[in-house]
Every structure is written in structure tokens, then in C-alpha cells.
Image 1 (cartoon, helix red, strand yellow):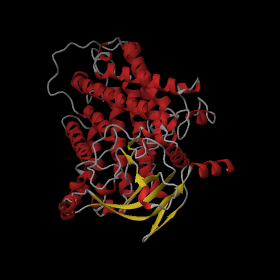
Image 2 (image 1 turned 90 degrees about the horizontal axis):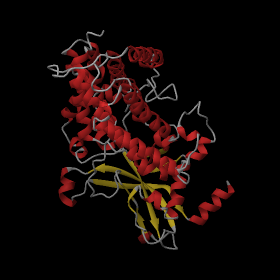
Image 3 (image 1 turned 180 degrees about the vertical axis):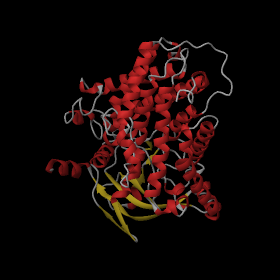
Length: 486
């Protein structure tokens, strides 16, 4: 096995992996620094202190069981960003082995602490992926030490599960993946389109079908090449990286694609060994690595069985440390795009339609002429969570049936009625900057990309049709009365 992962031949791969992963961690901590307080802070939509009362360190490990405050959260994010910069710059890579290992483990634990109180807003598969990659990166050793085959193997196994899990969940899920038609819809209905998504959507049908075939190859065939000798492993890794780059240019998936690309670095060895003398790993560090390998093997039992299960879990982890999870995405593809657009009115009369004005989120579609932005690898958590809300609405023809509202959404509407400054930082457009609205409501629209001909007429990216109210007009007095009665 060690011959397949010969030490000097992965010196550059380790260097690129470590620095790139450090950059991704920086983005993750920056996202938390900018958004956590509004979403999960002491006065957030789902306050972390309330959640901490219902859990323990054993069930949800993290430093906030010692104490939580929004200030401590900010310090945690700043510390995480500083450590991430030390990694990305290569400074930590030049440190002694102990400092290098402890530095990585500290980055992992700080972010674990955030994820484990993040509730719904941190329930994404790429959170676990980032934690798993960060934990096992702790045992790569600094740049002056010969790379070990153990963490390389573990991280390739992670990449294998990520890709194969995504491929299998597609085959077991939506029939459109089997009849090669999923890309007819995917680019239009994905959570956060980017500037090129509309062009991909209007590509010829043969292009879409070929794209599904290529996706199946990259996720169902190429992953097995990761465990073959070079150059076959490198070729397999190159296919995986190319596939992920296509996803990068056609959509916004936070750091999911970039993290998968970074994992792919370990499939590619140096063409020529760098002219550098590497020191051998000390015995104590070697023993730690074998202990980590044993841990990975034990934790791999359930994820391995999951790959063979007809009831395959997607983006699931069997432990609170977020290690060796099950990954996969888009087992089903929505065929229609529905958007919830929040509006406010400063009129005393809620029926005065001329007074209603729209709020605008940073990444989701809203204004019809706005080009979807590039936001990845940054993660706009509120945008993503609101994208999920239409899944709880039954659409029958032109009628909608709302099955209930999430607690965080009701609290969001209440904070808009108060012009909460922390929450409004997450919005791009606040039409009531001077004084709060008297009413808020949420409308339910069917959105579609405009055709080439329609775009030439009005320069709109989107067209939409109003189907009804997701949430009827609410006033602050009415909401307060409702919550008091509850």
C-alpha cells in the first residue's frame, strides 16, 4: 500500500491541499463571523443558548458548553480565521510537528463548536466534509516531514465516498438521472444560480444528456481509480476535478465543489520529486498515525454499508465529531422553481397594494432583471434555508397549500417588523431603512429563466407568476399577540 502513496511523490499535493484547505476554513469562519449572530446568536432566529440547554458536551461537543455569548462567538471566529491564515500562508506548515498538529486540531475543534450549535443553519453536508478533512489533515505532518501514506489513504477514501455516494443517490433517487434528463431542469431550479446558469439551462438537449453521462462516469466509475497505481489514480483524480470545476462555473454550492477539488489533489503525484530533503517521521508520530488509521477503519463500517443500502443516507454522520460521514447531493431534482419573496408595507391599510415593497436577499433570485451573482465558496445561509421552504408547500395547478411555517421564519418576520439591524445585514435590499414596516408578508411565485427572445425584449433574466401567499400580512401587534397566546 505504501508503494502506491510513496512519500516524496506527494510533497506538492500535500502543500496544495493544506494551503487550500486553510483558505476554505477561513471562508467558513468568515461566514460564521458575519452571519451567526443574526441567525443563532443570543437574540437570533434560533438562539444557540436555548439549544445548549437541551444538549450536553457528550451529545454535541464544543467549547460553548463552557459558556456562550455573541462576543465569545466572535472571538472564536476571529481565532479560527487567524489560524486558517497561518495555514493558508504556509507558516504553520513550517512549524514543529506538535505545533502543526495541535494547530490543525484547534481549527477543527473551533469549527466543530460552531457547527454543533448551528442547528438547521449548519445542517449541510459540506460542514461535516470540512470537519472531517480538517481532522485528518492534522496528521499530515508539516512541510519538512516526509508525507505519510496513512492520511493520504484516508482522505482518498473520503473523496471516494463523496463521489460514489453522490452517484449512487442519483441512481436510487430521481428517474431523470436514469433517463438522462435531470439537467433539463437542474440549472434553473438549483438553490443559488450564478451568472452562467441561464446559459447552461438553454444549452441543447444533447449537451444536457451528455452532461449527465459525464457526471455518472465521474461519480460511479472514476472513484475506483483513486486506489490504482499512478498514473491511473492521477487520471481518475483529474476527471473528478474537471467535473467539480464544471459545477463551480454553473452554480453556487458554498465550498462543496472547492473542497472536493482540494481532496482530489491527493490523487495526483509529483511528475518529478522536488529538490528538497525531507526528514523522517519520528516514531511517536508514526504511532499516532496508525491509531488514526484504526479510528478511520472503525468509523468507516457504517458509511461503507450505507453505500450498499437501498435506503442510502445522504449527508449523514453517525457521530457528533463529524468524522467519516456519508455524502451525496441532488438525489432528486425539482422540476419547477418556486420562490418565496418577502414584502413589507408602511401603510395602515394592508390592502393597499401600491404600498408593498420587496426585500432582496443577497444570492437568491428576486428582481427579474438582476443577474445571479457569484457567491461560492462563501455560504449565504439564510438564502439557502429560504430556498428549502417551498418544499413544504403543496402546489396543485395554480393553487398552493401551505403545510405550516418554520419557527425561524416566523421570528424572521417579527424581526423585519422591528427593523432588526443584525438580521437586515443578511439582506441586500431593505426598502424600509428609515422606519420599520407596519406589515410584512411572503408571496409564493413560480420563477423561470427567460428565453433568448424574451430577454431581448425586456432584458429580464427571470419571469415569474404569482401563485398566492406563503404567509399572509402580519403586523407586529398581531404577531406578539399570537406568540403570547402560544
